[in-house]
Image 1: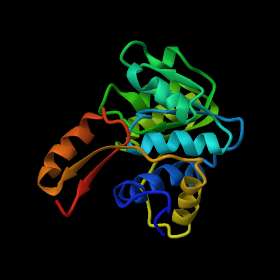
Image 2: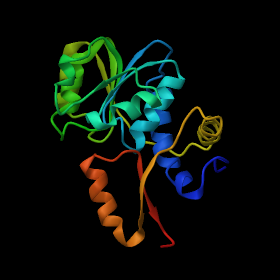
Image 3: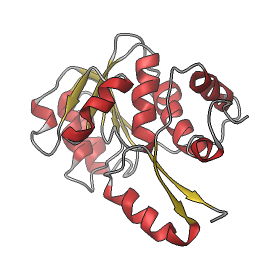
Image 4: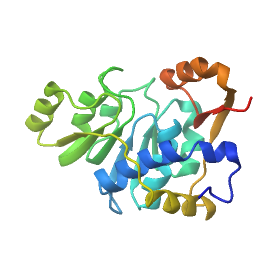
Length: 205
């Protein structure tokens, strides 16, 4: 069901991004209260929902994003924010239980560098780039775990996500609505990774 508190444009941003964030934190990482969770690309469509879900689960959330988005991310529930353009995140944080990497190793070796911030036995969820043999070997040598992620259909989770939204525990940010004929532009903006929230295509425009 569509969250009652959202219009159709906002609701369109929820299913894929919401399920991705939900399944990473709950089904894959099994995040518990008090755990330290580092989220890369925290201001994006998946990231801003992951911040809120992790906070709802009682985690201590650390978010990487450009400084202009730090105030907003703290409002969403991030306890700490790191400007990845101004400092190396691996020098700013340590003893992390779970890293949610929504950037990938193709961009500044984010997954590989994230291994250094995990506590022994910690988990890196490598979303866009998956787990290369080299990353797996490095994780094993460091005494940490790494797993790829692929979202799956989940009819049971969507009503739970909708309920959190309607309760006001989670907000959905839509940065921009673009007509379908600008799908390539939407893809380009998403690939650049500088969005605040989700980009939505309007199929009727």
